[in-house]
Length: 288
Image 1 (cartoon, helix red, strand yellow):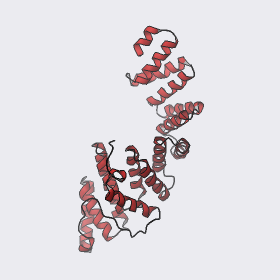
Image 2: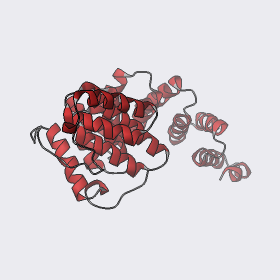
Image 3: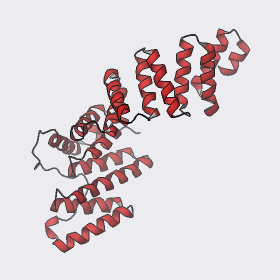
Image 4: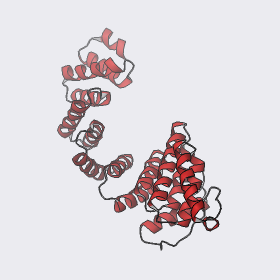
C-alpha cells in the first residue's frame, strides 16, 4: 500500500476536517445535524424530485450498482439520502456501492482513491460500522495508526465485539506493537471465529515477541491444524526449535517451508545454521 502526502491522513485539510466531523458525530462530540461538504462532486438537491422521481431514481441506483457503475450508484444513493437520511435502502446502497468501488480501487493498486471513496461514504452515513471498519483497515495498511484507531474504536462502539472489527483492531495493535491489547483482541476474535488459522498465527507471533515460547508453539501448531499449508507457521516453529537447539525438529519444519516456497530465505538460512552446528560445512554452503 502506498503512503500519502499532505495533511491529516494525507487527504488534505478540508477533507480531513470533514472526516473528523463524521467521527465526532459517532463519538457524541457533535450533533447529528452537523454538515460537511463532500470532497467529490455533488448531485442535484433531492428537493427537486417528486415521489415518482425518487422511485425511479431508487431503481436506477440499484441498476447502477448491479452493473458495477459505482460512481453513478453512489451519486444516486446520495440524492436519496438527502431526501430521506434514515432510509435503510439508501443507506445500505451507499455502503454497498462504496465498499465495492473501494475494493475495485484496491485491486487496481489505488489505495488512496479507495480511502477517498470510503471517507465520502462515511460523511453520508457516519454511523455505519462496516464503512468505519473498512476505512480503519485501509488506514492501518497505510500506516495512519491514530485515525485507524479512532475509526475502529468508533465502529466497535456501534457494533461491539463484531469479528471483523475486533480482528482489525488486533492487526492495528500488532502494527503498533501493543502486544497485550493485540493478545486480548485476538483471543476475543478466536472465541468468535475459532477455526481461523491465520488468527492463530497472529497470536503465536504475539506470544513469541513476548518470549512466551511454549504458548507460541501451541498457537502455531493450531494454525497448521486448521490450515495445513500455513507456511509461515512452519517457519516460526522451525525458528523456535532452532533457538532451543532442537535441530532435528527445526530441520523438519524448515523443509516443510521449502516444499511450498523453495526460495524462502529464512528457511534456507535456518538449514544452513543447522549444518554449521553439525560442522557439515559443505552442506551449509548450499544453504547460506
